[in-house]
Length: 316
Image 1: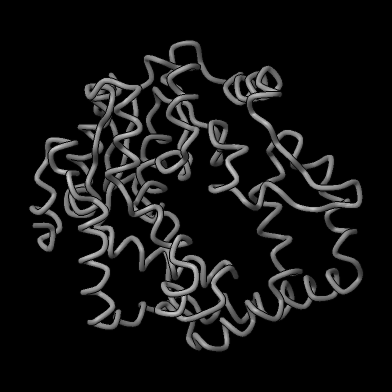
Image 2: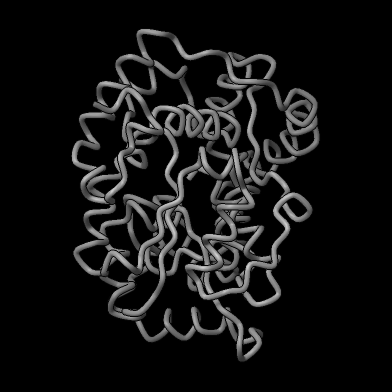
């Protein structure tokens, strides 16, 4: 997440020999509460409780249906940003697709953490400034920067040759070489023109008034997340369409009013206030995160057989 995966996915989707569903699927992490707390919510009929193990055949058939329109000779795949850090995904992948090929993009973990925070500001989840978030809810932005423990879990199930590591810095500086290497890894001819086909996906920015946006998040969060929530959930089995209207009703008239207010008013302001470059991170915060995330990723170079200090010099 926040490492260029959306842009890489868009390039792969442009390849004539591939087929990818149009959205993040989350099949292997669908019931992982740590990764998807928004898959568990209260309606008039009670709480939703997805259960991959108990309803495996149901989920498997749904997952297979996403690829029904793929040409017979297409290389099929999908990209879901929660797979890397999910405790459940590696074992489930190995059980269902033991010969799968995996592509992982890694970004400077400090920059990724900061970008993740601004993503949460924009989508209404962040309620406090960056430093306060690090103090009060650090897992919301740091967890996905713990690459070493996440990749170690995958290498317990998969051979190293099944894993392709892509560094965000390389992708930014030379997207053509990176996409050619990924195509070769996947057994695809290198026919993508990265400059012609590439569109920066999921680009971010900061609001003109950070404090005003954080105040909006605190005031409207319970009700105004319905639109973005539906965008994430409405394609998922037993979470989406059957219970969506009930979720709306459970928020009541106040929820309808505030949703309309945001859609008609605040959303217009957001469109006109975004994007703006992030403010610079405080230097003492950056030094803290460099020390913390270097420690949390100790052993990463040996694990993936790449000296990551060539990309992130603060790694000793």
